[in-house]
Image (spheres, rainbow, N blue to C red):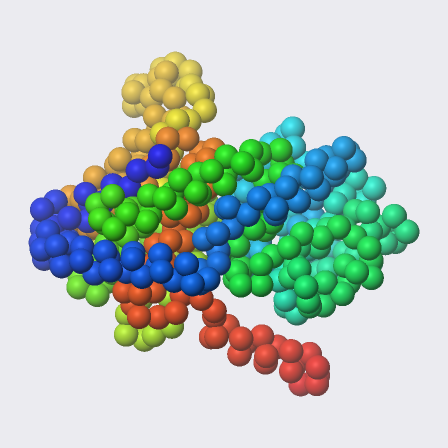
Length: 425
């Protein structure tokens, strides 16, 4: 089980005026106890549909059966079209599980023509699978990409193109559902009640996992076990409730509005961007309070941002994410005296030392930080991590008194872009 360490946020560690004193937790314990009970009642009433995704055996079987069939076809490249949650989640899967032994998973979310032309020059269409993931089928970026790439796929494979197309969409309605029926291609369902940023336990996350040969069952098992833990009414036993408490108090009581999400694992750099979207779209709905998420990565951002975090305005708090077990790669003997202390060290030791240096320096500067530690970066623990972070946002919705679902602020920009393209103005 992953671990959440909040010691770096506590008043007794970084002083009560800058951290969270025990009396704040005492006040919040009863509040979160009631909210945990409320969430369970809401689930029983059919709300929070995403929480049931890890238990959907039918979807799990559909994903496994289709991936097993496609793995027999000697596919080298998977072109995955999506945007937002339909691309950021799969990009995390790619970074963690893609290897020289798996197909290459190419996530296409850009409509920059220069980058698209470069990507298309590399595609061998006879060894390629095209996947589009969009619940509505009405979003500009994925649909424009789909029509472009489907035209290229059809030009290369002719009548066989549909056999290399998978559409992940609403199971009953929408433009992509109509296209799937017309093309006769394989489809996978997205529950219409689950928004993109909460869709990682639907085929949005499960299908790329299966295509890369990862253990989908372990991913879902990790989520289910975290679900059980996050139903505990005592926040000290419920990491999602505890993390939401830390976030809320640091923001509303200590004026730390910026949450820096900082994995110390290169394979989780897109996890920071996924969580950035999750927080921004779910909670950015009032001018009063709410976290401003900032995706970051260790060790690189130690050298670009740490100066500000250490001595700049006290606006930031850090959520570090790290793994304990790492691949073993050793440095040789180093004879230059100034760097001889590195001789024989593993790169894992270097990464751990860099993390400890950042965390301890923040503590010394009385700047709050918490850490999520995964024993290893595998399917089981990644499933736990995704579920924990989404569950935290549900609690935060209650604390901030906003609906964590929907993103009405995003729709105006889409509407204006459509009007410009429709009327040529």
